[in-house]
Length: 321
Ligand code: ACK
Image 1 (tube, rainbow, N blue to C red):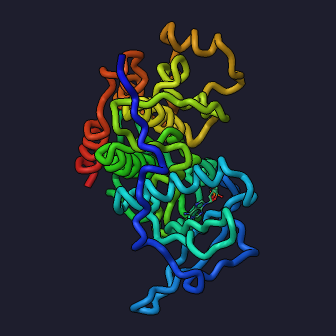
Image 2 (cartoon, rainbow, N blue to C red):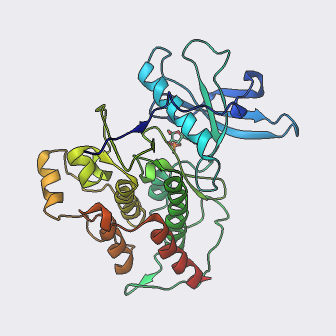
Image 3 (cartoon, helix red, strand yellow):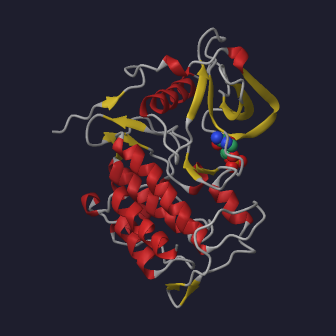
């Protein structure tokens, strides 16, 4: 009988070096970036104490001050972000206002990612996408590059770069024993330079033990969830690998809806258990599709690691440069 210890947000100490005095944060109340798990995400600017530099941030706020569940979730995200340190492929914490605020009021400021979420970005660039696959072989005449503007055409090489960057972010999270729990292209953000960063740690947990069992049943991203998560609500780094596989599938279909037309049902879980999986994306090689299928293995211990996935894409990129 495995005892599952979940590092509770209450046990985790928030690193107060991240605490921002409220007057260092200027919030643009009119600039709503979007709606998150717990509330509105607003655009803001944080003034650096020493250099007087101004950093663009996304400010996460709560829907209502009385919603204890959302407050807990936002504090949990804050504490995880503050404890794991920074990585170039995660949306890093800039600071937070938690003290001397109204009751139940918190502002969590994270790096601003000017190009929004990857799902929207892919959909917006579908029409002008340049497929670089010919008979299942990548034909790359342009080496890895920086997109010069957001209106530029995207190509297969860009999808590969975003897959690699996401894998690096997830490898980092895994090394900190953090499971994301909601990995999907909607939760990957693109910076002004089109670097992919893993975002939205609202459902994430820091593991003490091997896996955790979800107790509360809220809305679940079931199309991205591993078989063992759907059946037994078990989450682990390996269940994040499954979700990564679905995220790859989204990338290489330019953000089609997985299992389109399918509704949540017990039969859905049954068909997965019987071995039914998403089909090969139009813009992926057979090798990439094989990798996705590895991520969706029923036996979670047979799935590849984020290290192996990162290396898979790194190898392709080094061959292209
Ligand atoms: O792609 P979007 O319109 O931009 O949808 C989401 C929405 O808020 C809910 O999460 C936006 N958002 C969240 N975090 C950030 C960020 N760090 N930078 C820019 N936009 C953000 C996001």
